[in-house]
Amino acid sequence: MVKICCIGAGYVGGPTMAVIAIKCPAIEVVVVDISKPRIDAWNSDTLPIYEPGLDDVVKACRGKNLFFSTDVEKHVAEADIIFVSVNTPTKTRGLGAGKAADLTYWESAARMIADVSKSDKIVVEKSTVPVKTAEAIEKILTHNSKGINYQILSNPEFLAEGTAIEDLFKPDRVLIGGRETPGGQKAVQALKEVYAHWVPEANIITTNLWSAELSKLAANAFLAQRISSVNAMSALCEATGANVSEVSYAIGKDSRIGPKFLNASVGFGGSCFQKDILNLVYICECNGLPEVANYWKQVIKINDYQKSRFVNRVVSSMFNTVSGKKIAVLGFAFKKDTGDTRETPAIDVCKGLVGDKAQVSIYDPQVTEEQIQRDLAMNKFDWDHPMHLQPTSPTAVKQKLDYQKIFDNMQKPAFVFDGRNVVDAEKLREMGFIVYSIGKPLDGWLKDMPAVA
Ligand code: NAD
Ligand code: UDX
Image (cartoon, rainbow, N blue to C red; front, side):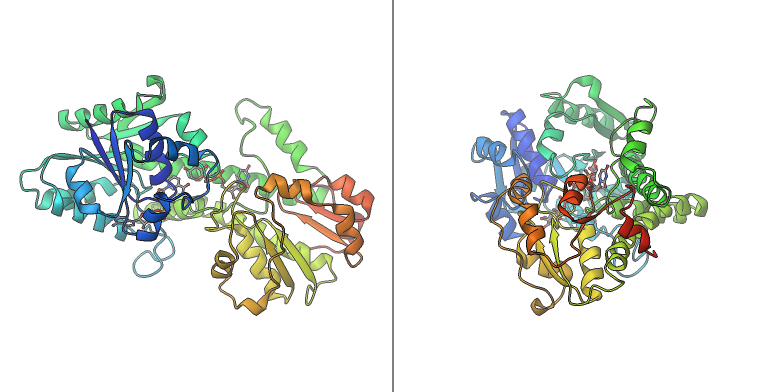
């Protein structure tokens, strides 16, 4: 029986391993983590992360061929294939601070693997890492290898939060990079066989190590660039009377452009896009490519511009001040169907509003009040208590909101600012709301109160 151990029981390690376990009943999968509360949660009825469909997959194989443990060393020592799926955040201090990936967790995992291993291992980079990381990992592992053979593979993960299980069941592709030596190719084949249990062979791409590592950063950079492109257009739409949804639809019909990932928004969030582009920018700079670095930097600059443009629109529409005004914020996570708040644009928006002394009430069905407080790093008295809505899914919130009742209870003029173009703006206007939709023709009121970004 092949034994797999995954170091890191987070948003990637947990769901990815659960899917391998359910698809490969003959493989024993153990997910280990240094965080006891996280492992306890994976072993409980309330999993540490919310992901549609995840509960069913975990419950189907936990205790059979899927295990969660804090006994990191034991399971690493016993494994044939070790996935490393630890966090690789942006460095906050030292060389490359604010851009480079912090590989502290990765390095400590690699050192531990080197310390405890007694048999040959395939070590798989699941985390998103800078291109050439495998070379450094190899050095750590083989420095004191005691005759053990290590093969490093790059197998970046492309799942998106909120659709992780769907993405893992039916990935567009699985990418495996390895050394072009007989040993490297044998390891690639071994990992390929794991995925081949449910992924068609044509969708399993094999490359050299550096191509696989770089493809992950490139994919995220291209995806984020589409959003910044459409968001840049949204500002021009507002200035000219064009409608960004119509523009997106029209350009997306070109099969070379395609319709996906063209929704204008208050800006992209999440733990990956910004971090990975900053990482890419840093790598370009380190390789003497400042023009390329500057090109990708613009994607983040437009995203920051879009977030501040939204806050400025809210403030300028309400007579240039929101001081003392009651503002309800619906949704706080970085996208729907997740409780993850890392880099959510809601943080920038709420901080901007609270900074102008608004009385902000925040509600998200998947995010706790404590989490919101931590994210905004503010004292409790700085905002009202979250509203006491009780539904369990964003869809339910939408269904329960009685806009007519809300309108009747609001001070006039009453405003709705839609950062995701999800409300029926025309219907709300008929009720009397002044509605701002990103990239859509502006109400007369909003035209008279121009936002300065
Ligand atoms: P996460 O923070 O949710 O999980 C990482 C886990 O690793 C944590 O639970 C932490 O306690 C554990 N850990 C850290 N060091 C450890 C060690 N030495 N030993 C054992 N456990 C250790 O992170 P995540 O969102 O799952 O992301 C993991 C990696 O995958 C990152 O590189 C990220 O860029 C990449 N990625 C994330 C996503 C996503 O949607 N979140 C998608 C694709 C790729
Ligand atoms: C992303 C990549 O999609 C995934 O392949 C990678 O593995 C991890 O990073 P994730 O960040 O989980 O996934 O979610 P994603 O669906 O990409 O959304 C990221 C952000 O972009 C969200 O804030 C989302 O609301 C925003 N977005 C997405 C838009 O503003 N417009 C769009 O058209 C699509």
